[in-house]
Image 1 (cartoon, rainbow, N blue to C red):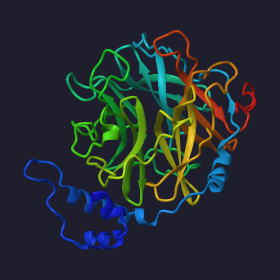
Image 2: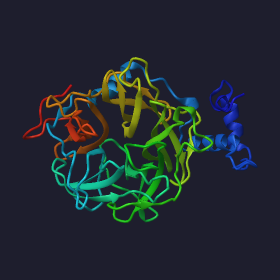
Image 3: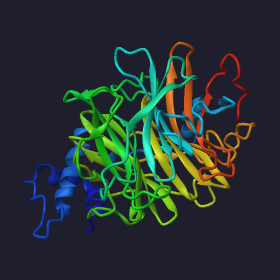
Length: 404
């Protein structure tokens, strides 16, 4: 019987019960590789502790998917980038594009903060901006720069998978301290000299102030060189998203096999050591769909009695904002129709790509703000990419009618 059927097969309940009570095997074999039996026992223990046995997953029908998707449709576009493609940030004057926004807050501070990356032709560096109204962003500064030469993050660090106080979809995005520090997972690239040069990996970083970040571990937490790396992710590991639930940590991440990207998940109890889910990927491409080529950059939130994942799909001529749902964090059902399609802004701001979202709820006007990477497709090395904004209600001033 295969390792996977040991968990998911017709006699899985018996095997899970045996695994949960059996003596745990040694972590590594004589060659230094993690033993499959250890992985399976730890996986069962992890899922049992979070009350998320894969044996109890329920199918989510299309009617339910439609109902859960409805609150996240009919967005109103902001006509311009809220963070421009080429901002001036101190001594950094050669940025060619901005990307990967993530909005957060710091306890006791009324301002909003946004991490984002800037590409300068060499690679990614992470920056942070601040705002009082979620529209006007200022005080750009470096948050995490290039890693040391010849190491896994020398070509770029992409922060934004923050540890939050709450992952409820309308909760404030307040950073949570653990062991006296703030935490983020980050995407990383080993080489400079181009755009997302493979093979990517992921690291973990901490911060004293929530503004500047430093490595918490000198080695990657996920890479293509580990024994449990699957075929679906063999060429590149990309961006993480962190969720804490019932004292356990989940890392949702996209990865590539050739030119195809899908999404998987890994588990941890300490943020430093991670174990992949053996049934990855959890989000698959659909032939002929809006996510035929990519199911990428997942962002997961608790949404009432279920979990909602925003991700971007690539298919049918563009990159689009998509949504999927789960009751247990490991089994997902995606809506085949995008929430927002590339080209939704009539100004052409996102004509080529609309992807890589950050969602926040503003209680002052009871409005969702969805920041995203808006790429018009201009003749430049990054296509003119910058940080765009769509909102669930029109904003006073310049917000246009629904983009979809």
